Length: 243
Ligand code: OAD
Image (tube, rainbow, N blue to C red):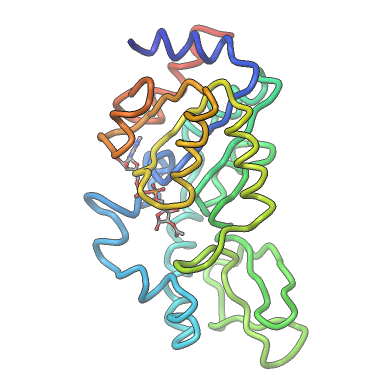
């Protein structure tokens, strides 16, 4: 089985769900989390990406997010992000589910990415709960405050370890993989639950499953087809033959 088979499934599917992870943005220059050069090799997740860490030292946590925002601000969507926009144009029932918080799918032109882990370009007030887009780089002073109250601290609108995924987005994502005839899993280590559970839900509901990844992952043996390599090359190749 090969990319020819994946192209055929894509051409024939009336409903497609795509699940992306950090690997799709790697080619743009956004660091991945695991593996060589991964963020979690340098930092401990629970020391920075958890409610406890934020309660203890909001300035430190924000400095880390400021650093990541600076890196991401200097990047652009790549051919992989753009290929997904093309696919979205040709499939009636298309869903893009992402674990990424970098906003590159939006920048590429994807219409409604379901952001399971939030968005690094949004803040939420810890007091009034208001969510706002904020693209300041760097963000100062830290931690930022809300206008609702002098003591109201803003946090990044991302999901931290130990927190639940946004319920409505999860429901939409789950429904999408249940409907899908084809589930494309792109650039994710597939080890972070519950996001990785969506792949299994797709399989159980009869979808063809195709993984696109630079390396093997725990799902490589269970998906129908593995396309090994760079997402920025394989995704455009998937649509080259036209629909
Ligand atoms: P990871 O860093 O865990 O995995 C990135 C995956 O992308 C790996 O499987 C790589 O082999 C693959 N990869 C790297 N470069 C690639 C390329 N150019 N083309 C294709 N594949 C490539 O990232 P995620 O799976 O997205 O959560 O991580 C999931 C979650 O773990 C993140 O959303 C984040 C993190 O902790 C939260 O912050 C809640």
